[in-house]
Every structure is written in structure tokens, then in C-alpha cells.
Image (cartoon, rainbow, N blue to C red):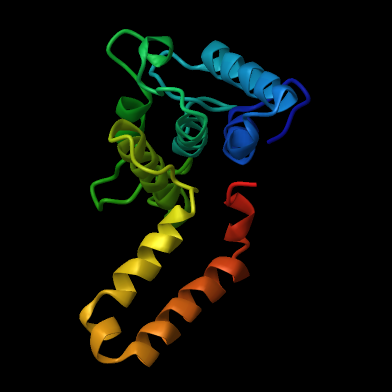
Length: 178
């Protein structure tokens, strides 16, 4: 679903993409507009959706807000007793998966919901954001200082190279600070 007047999925994804450039005044203005859109388009149950609430739309907005440092459970994004996390919790099926529009558990819906929960946990704990890659340095350090790194340095170097290869292959270096 796409519209020239905006939709939650695209807005959330735009916030995620723009977050690392928030110091630029034009980008900051776009982020402000996107946050205002999110405030204005939140549904009564705390969630989001172009055609009624959906776990996917709610997840994208929640992740986007966390990426730009806006509390998705703050007063601006709480409707009575409902917020984005309470909305997302209503999408968990008995089998543990997240429900998509047809009612079945869906892998894409599930991973988006889990990413949203992880993004919020990191935000709430003042940890690195979901897409901040200084975690690669942490991985490199942990492997180098593990028993593998101390006993078999060439294996540690190989593991670090593989991790870096996949980060680059997936294009994750695009999220590194400019």
C-alpha cells in the first residue's frame, strides 16, 4: 500500500533510514514531519495500519521512532491504556507466531514484531540502536578475546572476516555513521 499522503509503513522505514543523518537540518525537518505524521495517524488501540491496525505497520513506526530517539511509549504515543507494545501483543497467536491479516502466523510479521520489541528494549536501556554498527567492533573484540582467539588466532581472524563479509554483503555498512 502506498499513498502520496503518507502511510505508516513507509513513514517508519523512512525514519529508520534518515536517523543517522539527523544532524542535517533538512533531514531533521523531514524527521519532525514524519514524527508528526505518526502522532496524527496512531489508531485508538495504540497501533498503526493503512487498512486498520497491523503488526507490520505498528512495528515499522515503533522501530523508526526508536531510531530517531523518540519514545514510542511516551505520552504522545499512548492512547488511554494502550500503546504500540500493547497493540503488538494482541497479534501474538497461540503458536507463538505473529498474526498477519489472514489470522495465520506469518514469518515476516513475526520477525518485524520481534525487531520492534528489540528496538524498544535497546531504546529503553539506552543501548545502541537497532541499526548501529559499532556492534561489529564489539563482535570483533569478543571473538578476539575468547578462548578461540587466544588458542587459535587464525580461526578467530577467519570468523571475524566472515562476520565482516556478511555485514558488507547485506549492505549493513550503509548504516555506519558518515
